[in-house]
Image (cartoon, rainbow over all chains, first blue to last red; front, side):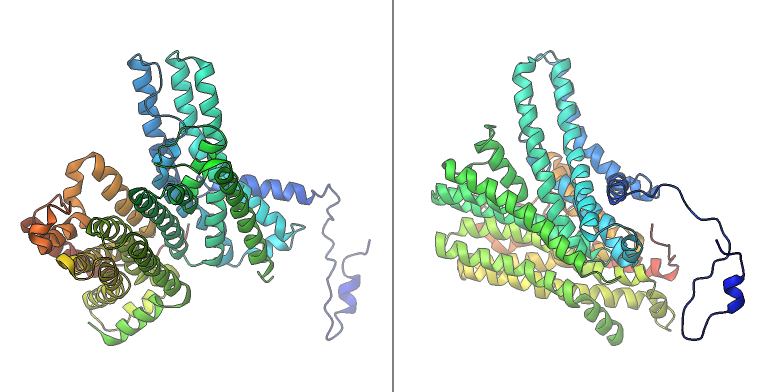
Length: 303
Length: 242
């Protein structure tokens, strides 16, 4: 180890940078791996999506939306407990579809908060100067947003399930539908997180990302409802069935209906086995495309 | 009104990605209109469904939100509004100019496409296109002024505006009928309905408020929010992000 000053005494040669050893203690402890970094970023982002670890003002909106998501479920659970019914008023599998606006606003608010700020304030070099690879950043953010959206939808579903059990409804009738709806919620979360993160990553400007995400999601839902309505009116059942592909929520509802055997509140589900496979294929494709687009986007972020 | 402020606002509103978004939304409406005319033929019920359910209910609030908050929000965000406020201009004239530009943008990207979609879907039958075009323009004006005020009041203007436009007007409005009396969309529909005259009832065009209530409420909204935005600009606090 060199003594303090022996490098400084020589002085930096002109035109050549020198890192001075000022005699501070070295760090010899354990250095954590990429995996630890990715996990830490995941946890931080997932908590951040509910405002935990951020300012009090940024907790308001996600918590309000979470409460609004849970309120109808709570009412359903209370009704089931008070009046002695033999099934829950309003099923598990159509719940997410019914409150889709709230989920849209949630991702529109939180996806830009998760990725746009890092781009806007140019802190990406700080991430990438660690052993963290670009794909790790993307994976951590994608997983975190998926987990946050899944939690947003799983909590009310769980409230309903617990309510049903407290109301002494038979568990073997409740459990399959609850499991189906959780699978659906996970798929919706994957698709929503992907679409919203891609949009947020290309619109670092504040406010624009929120508007762009909600515009895309609301327009997809609006187009889906219009096309399906028109097709049903015209008696084109196949077209009406495939119209479900247009919006993330109806896309996953189609999978729930055709592959998992849930009931659908839509006028027309995916037609036949081919329809079911098309719906599944489109979902996988959308998720993969979003992840790929994010990886490409972050490959271009300069350090 | 100030020409330079107007030009700067228009440039920031129509810059690159925002312009793409502004163009994409009406393009979807026109594609839908052409598709349903080709597939379904001329059907006035369909026109009402598409223009009322999609154009006025979804497209116009979204464009009003993008134009209204985009006219002033980014400037407040990055703090560059101080250079504008430091000029010897009345704050009210700055607010008025920005609202006017936002309204013009909404007119170009929401009202005109709605009118065009109406012509594509129904031709000139029953003045449906004109009625909905005027309705879209009026709703867009209300939304633009309201959301510009929101952008001055809060940094979360876009989310708050969305909560109003999507949750209050559609979700709450469908459960609590009284909530619809305070809905820009319903005020605009009142005007559409009166333009349609006798044909409104068979086409199922309804509004929660009468024309006598809608017009004063709209005027109060537009003038009131523009004035209050100007008033708030007199003492604007620039807070840091998060």
